Length: 332
Image 1 (cartoon, one colour):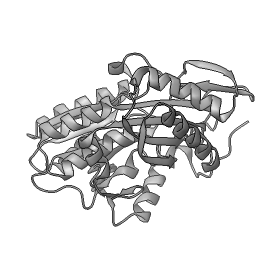
Image 2 (tube, helix red, strand yellow):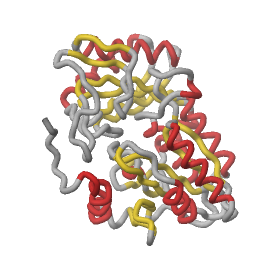
Image 3 (spheres, helix red, strand yellow):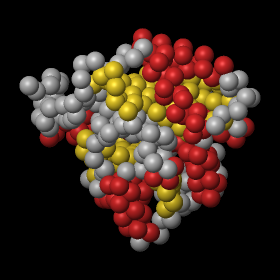
Image 4 (cartoon, one colour):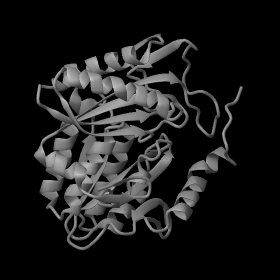
């Protein structure tokens, strides 16, 4: 059995999506001439400003290209579905946003992305563009912090780096703030059903009708525990227990919360989850400064959700509140 998708040709899905995105958001975005996978903010890059380049595989919208705009990312290199962009569109993004103050690459910690962005950084250096890199490593389900995947926490890490650059901070400062944001961002997800790639229209993993998997990655990578489907409160408790064990929150801490749909999970269920998140944080004396609920980092049509906690101090709160105006996200 093939899954149902509203597409024309699976092999053309990403390029046709980009045509639709550019048609919908002409005041925010344009493609670099001759490089249609290099999407640039109309009002982002400017002389003397650190350029912010993000990117990764398609299928996670609004991550990544939805966060391109003034006050957030200046450009996005777009890969195939669940695949890293190759070096060339990344380099074109770097050239398009270079204002003479250096460029910061921000993306999730995946081997293909690391290889291609590193190659692009070397190529950009040949054009006298200084490039630094900050990887998002927020997925507490995986390994040690340095080796972890970047998942929905990209939302907060990109926001901090983009705000620092928009404030015309130096490359050193923009890099420092982005790293600080990543260090204070913690995510755990749960999957209920698989997604399917446009090219195959076949589920990318199997899971029982009455099962869930805690910690599954946004490409269907194995999680940490599979078992019977539990209630919303039980699921959130299990996710938060794992986050708290890593984050070690203290009474008086302040956080921003993201309750994220992986694609098919509707707002009703996300808000039920957020209710429990707020209860658990209140129980330990942690304040919530801001909350986002919805599809912010998806996995095509996967059913499931993730919870991200972003611990704030004065500086990170300032970055979070800094205005941005992107095709698919606005703040301030």
